[in-house]
Image (cartoon, rainbow, N blue to C red; front, side):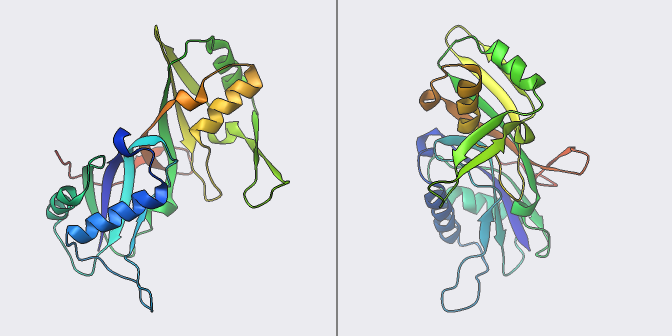
Length: 234
């Protein structure tokens, strides 16, 4: 069987790398003494994975860990043991169990919901309206491992719409971002796009970025929870 946990990456650990976050989870699984399965060969690895990589500096309430077991285990008991083994900054929110041959979570993640809060109160409303009504909005970035190549990305393919709330001292942006097998769009790149395309001066380096949800999608674009049945944890 496989266990699936919904966990967090909170503010006090948001600047650790994705690799270190993954390693921290692996160490917690071992401390919890869960009957984890391992790969075969000279250098066996524990069979666990995350549904979608998270950027450095991003807080998340919707990280999903999938762990293959060598024997059945009560999901609630596993969640309690895992929760006690995790360090500060990572909490277990829910757990589910599926058959070993169920599709991997990373193959079914279809989208994510974000909230971005910036200590800035510039005139973003007009820019958001223009972005929402545009058919295409392009962002250019350096392609990895190709120093002279520039990758041109249609932001609207990944983020069709933005909503905005402005308060006395801050601006809050909400949006959903598509996740595909070929990649996704970072929230920081959306902010850079708004600055470049609409002449804004959002202080990107001061933005608090939070992943609020991660979900599956079907061919019609409907959103479904990553876990089919949640055993909520306190």
